[in-house]
Image 1 (cartoon, one colour):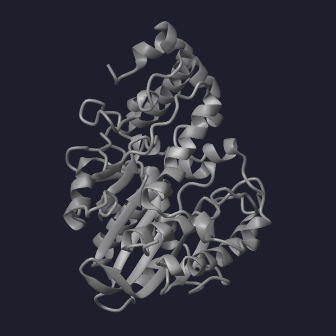
Image 2 (cartoon, rainbow, N blue to C red):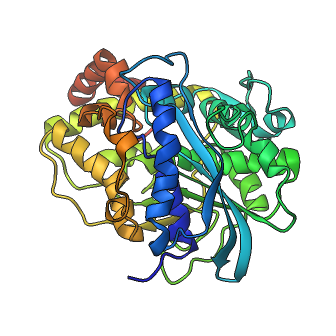
Image 3 (cartoon, one colour):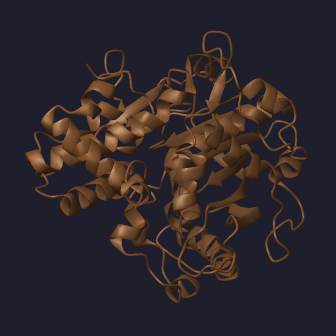
Length: 415
């Protein structure tokens, strides 16, 4: 088997930040587990391309107010790895990879992703990102570059949280580390799922605020962070690269599976983006049974209702797509959730040829932590978390949409 190229190495490091994604435990136990899991991950993957990488900051786990809660996973997990001789297509460079985990708890989607109804001017936020972000009370979509309030919350956490005493570079932030790296070093921001939205946004904030240079981003399966002006601003600092011989060999593009529900959020414009918007979700795998289709219609109606108060149009970042094997049509919601998980995580491992099961062993610190059930895991993905928070509203919307009731008349989009 050929060694992984720089894109696969980056994705493998991104996956390492997600090692706790299926786990639930108090913060101290999660932190202890990730501190051994990530270096072990890198060590076991050395023969496949991770040789030379070393953790230089973190890893750090953050949970909101439920530090001692044993029934939830981390809200954010991130770290920095350094390789003094990472091989790129155009040469060998000292490289720092900032790997940001995707959602692993309901807080990640409700407060960092479902906070899409309010927005933050990224230029204003970047001027003082140490201050908790404030939503714009009167957004001007045409004039300003906006990100979702929840995305700003996540970036604020990533840039201001210090590494704990037991991690690498304790007491420092990733900002302080990146401010002292050798001149000419390359910096890669990567993340999957929620990390696929946070990583390019964090990169842009540091480019605007600190003049961070030689930046590359490699988001995968990311939801849409902001509006058109944000996309233009991001592209001006991070021009999308021309893909290599493999579709996933591209920088500054959201690499995503066309059968994955997560990148469908948060655009609701099915005319401009017919294959990447919330309304596309019920039909993206084919024609569903009517009961399941109605349930999803209600779910999406509620999700769209959360987007509309933003007063902006969410525009996807430039994408680079692949299509996994078309699944069998799910016949019920349990089957739908299983397919959604498969298309959101394992499908990427298959497409990029990076499967941690092939090299990650001896996960003792992880193995003692309780595993999430599929239902607990799936609600950490977008849309589905709403099922736990708004079941009555979703059921009512499903019924109304099926019968042509009030929800159909109230729906401002999709017709």
